[in-house]
Image (cartoon, rainbow, N blue to C red; front, side):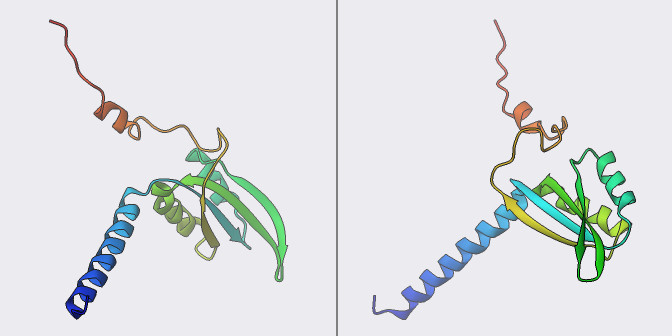
Amino acid sequence: LADPITYIAYAAGFAAGNYFGIFLENKLAMGIVMMRIITSTNAENLIAHLRSLDYKVTNVTAFDNDGIVEVIFLPLRRREINEVLEVIQKHNPKAFYSITDTRNLSQGALPVPQKSILLHKRMFRFRRKAK
């Protein structure tokens, strides 16, 4: 291992593997996250819109250094993050939000998947025809 090219090749392979893994994980967007939205303005329109999209919304009135705020908890699938961010920007662009990964979630906390989401079940269905 005296050859410096070996070290460079190892480092390049390690970096490429990490980059590809992160890229693939972001594209698959599997898993569940918990989004917290904190807003100091009226959030009724935002909450109503999220509920109309069948998200399970929990909101709590809280206090921070500047006064009363509304804290919204929203469990969702990772692939739905961009859709929810668009709704937040539309209704309350100055809202603060944070997203954390969630390992386990009790049943019923997420809406039932739509038929388009169940594509993988149709895709791997074996088609056997009788003779």
